[in-house]
Length: 370
Ligand code: ADP
Image (cartoon, rainbow, N blue to C red; front, side):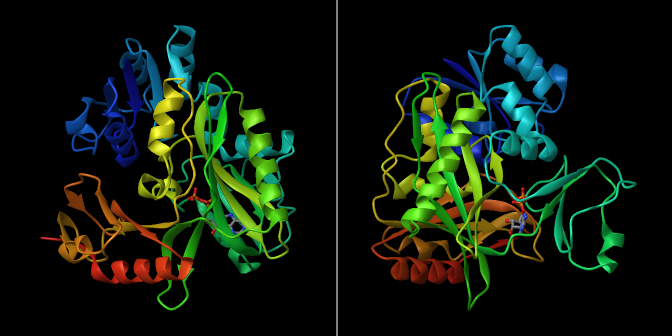
């Protein structure tokens, strides 16, 4: 089968890596000639935001999917009309792309998400009491396009673009749940993962699984995933980012209609990974079991501050000596501060051992430049 992916980044790369054991041909579209998927797929250099580029790329494929949601959804809708299968469908991609539509979607389907107000332009009066969060309708990614407004003075920093004004949640934990649904309507959910910060080292980018949750909280999450899957009306793999507030209530922060950073530890930590699951969704195969083997965690390898250029991974030999520790690099030649270059997955028998190992591994590696 000819499978086309819009975006040629690490998520696409790991999807292809996982699917190579089956017999398919992968095609990718990305503006960067050195994209992680370039040398492992049939690569087209082009802009996935451009209507014609997406149409041309997609028209001779059996199925088109995405590894980034900021793509030209109108072209995907046209491809659907022409009989190309698009997973997830153009409509849900369009909804999720725009924060305003996404928030209205949650409201329509009674999915708990922080209270909000839509602001189309800067003349509109903000009714939300302080403090609140402003999220740009479009163009936000990886924390950009999100800001907290705490005081009257902060009002001057308000962005003028169309945005969602959202009440500030008193967060206890940030959780994520990855769900999948195939065309036949079969659904499977991965165990919930947690983003943890190490209080001593102030590290913010560990993702661990499983998470201890009370029966009530797990019930709330199950209800959210069920409502979500019933509402999307599309096959796909979705990462639902959740807040657990200090009163024990679950809120949906946002959803990604694709593979997600919070699911990387499933590569070695679960019976099947999110990538295997995505492959099955794309091909409408029976979905994979998602059980967690034990404790697993992931740390991102991001470019260190102050280094830009040809990448060097410092300390990798030491990491390779660690048992049950797995390095995944994304094939990016150039590093820059904050750029996601790879990740490391770690397995352990307890949460304490897992955290210890993650902190240790984190202290051993550095992503620098020549
Ligand atoms: P991105 O798409 O860039 O990841 P998010 O919407 O996930 O943006 O916001 C980034 C971070 O901002 C979240 O992980 C969370 O820590 C914080 N945040 C976002 N919305 C809220 C909210 N309503 N209340 C409290 N914190 C929030």
